[in-house]
Length: 125
Image (cartoon, rainbow, N blue to C red; front, side, top):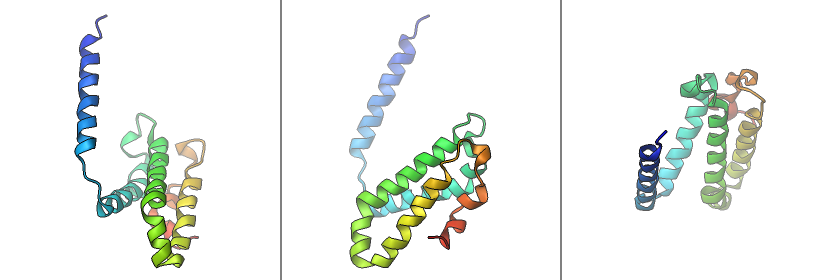
């Protein structure tokens, strides 16, 4: 079995991805928009099985989304929010922790999707 064409294609796509990543300019607004999109995906599509319902990776996708939200918050926004509005920072951390905790279930069937929706996290701390 000759896998050389697939190997060459994979190398090409990885190289192309590396170029795109180097050429992508990250902005605070772009990162904030991205984090918001990740939260939206968890609550509006992935919590009910989402686009990965047949591959069975929706729960991992949601966990990765939550990790991305936490990483962007911690590395980009936390210090500035803490300096400007400590109360807001104190309110956001437990919400992110709660989302990550909700996604700690052993399988998608164990997830209460209504509790993972962003609107259900608003009033919690």
